[in-house]
Every structure is written in C-alpha cells, then in structure tokens.
Image 1 (cartoon, rainbow, N blue to C red):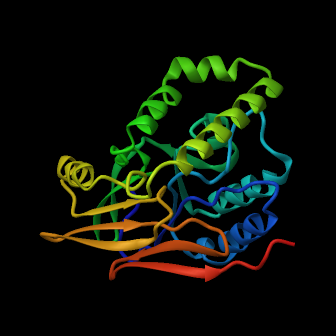
Image 2 (cartoon, rainbow, N blue to C red):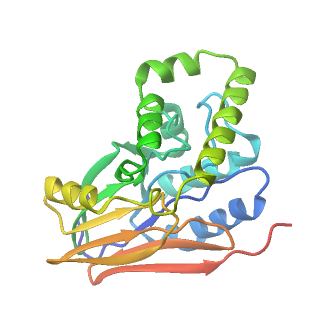
Length: 247
C-alpha cells in the first residue's frame, strides 16, 4: 500500500454520465486534468455512468473518459472503482482499459488521516425492502451472466425497462425510505471497526457527526454542481464546484 505521508486522496461518485449530458462528461474531464492529476489516489464510489450494459458495449461518447482515466493511471495516480447500482456490470475489461482496481462493495482503506469504510451506499438503504430484493437479484452472478449473454439490443431494452420501472416505483416512495438506515450504518462501521464511513448513492452530500467519534461523509451527485471529497493528513473536506450548463 502507498504510504499515507503527505498523501492526497480524492473521492467522487454519482456522476451518472450519459450522452444527453455532455456537460457532465466535460466537467469530469476537467476535474481529472485539474484536481485528480494532483492527487495520489482517486476513488470512484459507483454510478460513474447512468447505465452500463457490459464492457463490450462502451458508449462512444464515454471513450474520452476511459482514456483520461488511463492517462491518470499511467501518470502514477492509483485509481479505484467501486460498483454502484447503475454500473454494477463493470468488469475486468474496464479495469484494464482505465488502469482502475475494482473494489468489493465494502472495503476498509487507510486514508492519510486514518482508516475509513467505503461503500456505494445503496446496501445501507435497508428500509426500502423492495429495492433490497431487487438489488439482490441484479447482483446475482447467474443473473448477470444471463444478461451479458444477450445481444446488445436485448440488453438495452431490458435496461430501459428496469430504469423505467425503478423511476416509477421511486416516485411512490418517501425520501426517508430511500435514505440509509442509521442502524445499518452503525452496524457496518462496528463490523469494520472504523470511525469514518464514506459513501454516495443518496445524493445528499453532507458530513454527519454520529456521536462517539463516528462520522459519515456522503458524497454528492453531479448535476448543476459537482462534488468531491478531498482527504489529506489534516482531515477530509467535502467540496462542490459549479458545472456549466448543458449545451
């Protein structure tokens, strides 16, 4: 593991890159060139893309993102990717093309100011029982193998159907149900024996003081502004910046 002395680690998540939002892709490319090139480690905690139907179906409009990530990796920045609920089908080919290391859905890492538990965060939304069952299905290796064996056209159709169904169901749910469950948070931190949890998914950027020295930092989603967490030996800072409009 890289020494944490004088190290700078950056975290992003929930960019939801897609062809209809070229402004988000431009913002990411600028971020990678400006901020990420000045750090030692970059962690992407899921939902980098709005959808991912397989490493054999890389959207042409996102090819510059893969190339920019590979450039960073070649420059010596360590890149880490943790699957989200939109891009859980990212596999080893993506890792090879970008230079990213794929992480498990929960992992403890040593940051400059101490250890932290990393998650995308959707697995903490345990009050949303319907979603948790759906998540279990999509993360099933057999379901993924069956899905990836279909044609690209079939995969696109299924993905669109799943997305439409998800949006319809979410519209009927309260915001509280779709947020993390505090008991699940505390249990996860206890199991990992850490005082800091970093995650995304909920689109509610904030730093939560949980008492007893425990903290939960939620990364922000990218829309009219972008978010990243800047970690150095002096601590962690959640930073936002404006994203120029979609043109």
